[in-house]
Length: 456
Ligand SMILES: [Zn+2]
Image (cartoon, rainbow, N blue to C red):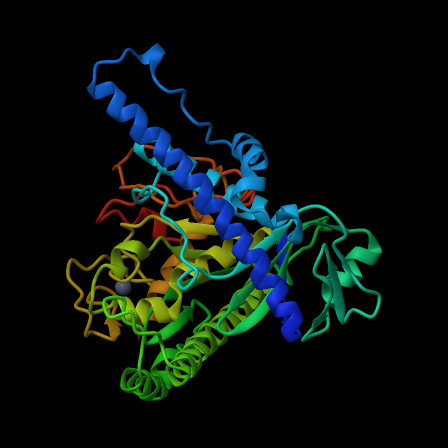
C-alpha cells in the first residue's frame, strides 16, 4: 500500500461541495458518538440502581457496520438533507468513530501499545480538518493526468501532474483503494491509497553498508564521512512566523465568552500563519524524502540507532529542534523504502554505546560529554569526528546481524532494554517490514567489544 498525494485546484463551488461532505462526515460522527455516550451513561446509571446485567439497556454496537446501520435508520430525522451528500461522507465520520472507539477500548484493556488513548471527542467545525474519504464509486485519474474524478464531486483539477500514479494505473501495477480529499495549510489535496505491485529491485551497491547517525547539528552523518546538514526550516521561518502571530494577536479574534466573532482580517492573518507552518512542513518532508530515497536506493544495509524520540520530545529544551529535524520520520521512511529497494534496515539497540565506542579499536569510554565534538581514543590514538565515529560503529554492527531474524523496525512503544548475554526479544510487526529484510542487533554489554573487532 502506498499513498499518492496531489495538490488540487478547486473552484469555489467545488470547495463548497467538499466542505459540505466534510461537514456531513462530522455530523454523522458527532451523532453516533452522542448515541454511544448516551447508552453508556444510561447503563452506568442503571447499574447504580442495582439492575442486573441482563436487564440493562442493550449496549450500542461500536463496529462500523453497527454504526452505519444505526445511522441509516436515523438519518432521515437527524439529517433530512442526507441525499445531497455521498454516502461515503457519512461513512468517513462513522469509520473514524469506530476506529477511535476501538483504539480507546484496546488501550484501556492493554491490547494496544503506546500512549493511552482517550475517549473520542466531538468534532468541531472550527478545529477539525475538513476531510472526506471515498472508497467506492467512480474514482479515477483522467487520461490527461491533470484531472481526477471522484464520486459526487465530479471532475477536479489537479495542481500538478498525476503521471507517477497514472503510469502505474495504465500498466496495471496499481489499484486505487480509496481517495481522500483534505485541506492542509489552506490548500486542498487528494491522497490516493493505492495497492501497488512492486517489482523486485536491488540497491545500487548490493554489498555496501552505511551507518547513519542522526543528530541536531547535522541531520545525518554517514559512516562514509558524508555530512547531511540539518536545514532547520523552522528556524528560517521563525521571524516570519513571529511577525504573523503578532499580526494575528492585534486583530479581533473569536471570544467564546463574549460571543465575539473573528474579524475577516483576523481570519486572513490566521490563514497566512497556517500557510507559513505548512510551508515548513513541506520543506522538511521534501528534504527527508530525498535523503531516505537516496540512501535506500544506494545501500543494501542501513544501520540506524533506536532513538527514543517520544521521550526526547518530552524534553522541552530539545523538543522543537528534534521535531524540526524529523528523526522519527526519517527512520519510518527508511524502514519502508529499504523494503521497496530490496535492502534492509538494521536498528541498533537503544543502549548500544555508538558514540562512546572507538571505531578503530573497539575500546569503550565510560564518559563522553556532549561538548566533545571529536572522538579521541586514549587506547589507539584515533582522532575522528564524534558523529562519524558513531556512524562507523553502527555500520560495523551490520556484519553481526547477517544471520538475525526479524525485529521491530518502526514499532511504537517497543521496549527493548538490553539483556546481557541473553537473546534479544524479537517481535514481528506485520506490514512494516518483511522478516528477511530487517534485524535486531545482538545485545551489547556496556564494555563488551567483541562485536566491534571487525570494524575497519
Ligand atoms: Zn581506539
